[in-house]
Length: 307
Image (cartoon, rainbow, N blue to C red; front, top):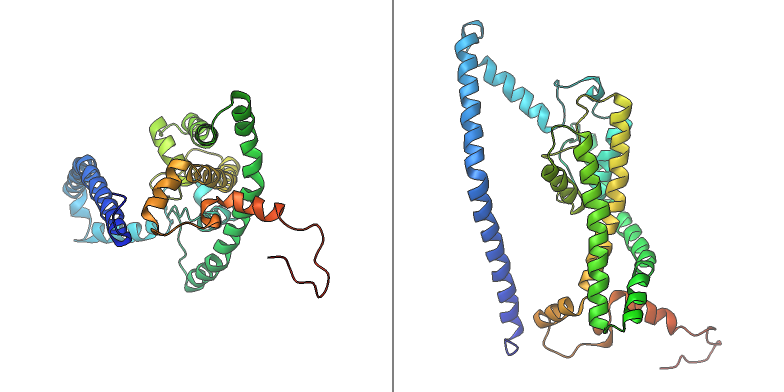
């Protein structure tokens, strides 16, 4: 396969991606089709029972109209079902969680602007806030990644590991640490606090949040049975969890992307020409190289810089 032209490699990568999408679609269709059909049948049976019991008291089409209004309101996060903790969907904790879901690109979909001014503000806010969030995350990553690599470096020196083995050990250790602290541990807490949530659903929610998928089908308790103060405190905790968890996920992804096996795969699908020293070094290595090769003093005026 090393003799393939670059365009053939790109086509191979695109075809593999499309096949993976098709395989995922087939598996989800097989898994989710029967439960969805069963739920639809159950809903139709419930509506038929309600019409048979109370149809004489309602004008024709009144129930469908009411359900349509309720569903349209629910799509914007407005619902009359719930306790007093959900009386205002745009209180400060809820608004902070909404802005965090925008800046982290999670987008749970549990709330949406209703007014034209709110929609316009979201466009401007996301256009300015997303680049600022990326700069913040990149800065924190640059500061934390060398610190997190110290244990792996010490173990590699202690056990006399090869660079490739040390990189794999560091990536595996960081990935396990992130999975335990930001996925498994919060899932156990959520499972213990929320009675109507299984452990699998809690892990599914945590992973969906940190991977910025944010399907919005699961949200922590949504205020049911909780005191308003506890509910709002949980929203603030979720806000911090999103910010810290996204940073941890990016650190793990950055570490795995620097593995020799991953870089060899990227090189295979890259241009066939020789790689430059900048391409051969990782992002962190380039930064360290540029910092280590800076002269201690700036060149004097009129003195040409050394080539």
